[in-house]
Length: 465
Image (cartoon, rainbow, N blue to C red; front, side, top):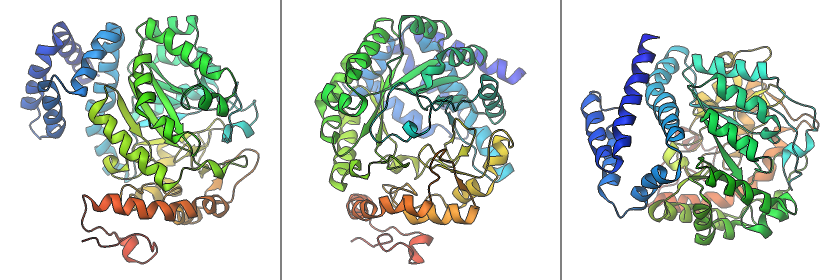
């Protein structure tokens, strides 16, 4: 407790010092961190940050300054304390220690579904089949956060369904857990004046608003009028100097729009400070495999997002194509896990199989359970990290893990046989393997892992010269 108080005081002092003159004092603060970092844990990060600060013409320098200009100072301070320090800097050492102690993954974040209910009915969404009555109580949600904090986890995300159907409970949890940062993948249509006032009050909630492109693309998948509701929510958040980002699912129908400079520039103009990119995954009985992107479209997004990182003042993340930077798949507790509205503890929001439920097992028990241990022992699933996913990129890997662990389908209405699920991804996985291997070869002249060498994956383990 004493250590936590000291770290809080240190964090607030460092922020207040930097906040008085960020352009001049950020560099001094990085130099101080460098001196205190005796074991060089943050050496690489400090080097990158120092280069950014020195180049005032770079998009990243402009991005940092925009945070000071566009976001309320108290919200910015809470983000610095809760996400940068509590969730990232202070917890990393503890996560590694617990990982060694328990011999399992310890996640950086927990994603959970307060409800399966949704006010929209989007094409190809698995939540549409769940019905409207499946929810976790606020007591259960709170218990998940309490358990998570015991493992050093200070970052919590909500999905669904539409999580803001439970926005009153979400605000109560923000209020109770003031040392955590919260986000939600939301369609944005329920963000109103009253809710933004609550966001200003609690200061530790930052939404990621789903948008499928411009009006035609968004309304085609999410329903007529959705785009106008989404942009109205963004306008309100920007006006109140609240932090928010976007969540974009690219399909074969909208990739060229979502991957365009015009779209990313429009998000920046609307005030978004980050954007999560997701590719369409054909999960659930109502899945539409025809929406899966082609290998060429996925490569387009890979190239465009990397270009945006060099040129645009916005933080971009691609859940699949960034395996290159994350060292492969981040699911299975390696960086995050998912708890659905029925309490099933799943390795990923897109992998609906489980052997544990929050009502009869702790989070730590689940992490040490058969399915999560399969993830722990098998990650990365491919030594080409542009092929990180055990479903979309290496479908046989998911079959093996589910069968070995004895995990069951968690689909509430139509339990899904894992082999039937993975069959939807086999053809595109083979097509993407060719493109991904070519891209990987640009920077890696030789790659192979035990799985490749055993001959189980005929498309991996190739030598490039």
